[in-house]
Image (tube, helix red, strand yellow):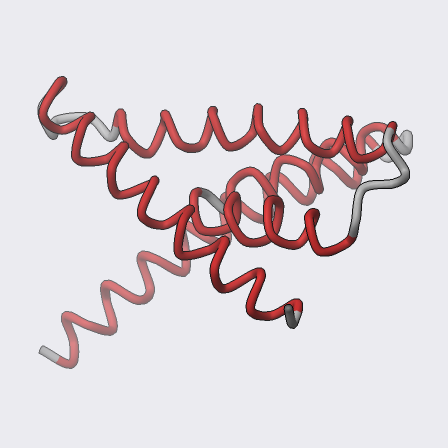
Length: 125
């Protein structure tokens, strides 16, 4: 199967799972706090760390499996897991300062971009 199809199929599964967690969370806890997003971010981070560690130990794991699970399923479930793995990779390389810059820039710029998008939408509407 073509790598992009593996990513697309995995992404669809991850997105459906994310939606399921968000719906279940809203039913259980209400919608006053984003428990669903928090849950998928933490669960996705745990799964990304587990998979990255296992794949590092098992060199026989196929690139297709990595693409399907890590880029596809977890990418559709939460991109926060990829962000977290990137930050930890920098940290483990001994580049703590660069990891801090990456985390601060990712969070700050992303929130700023959402604010800019909302302002633009309001200006256009």
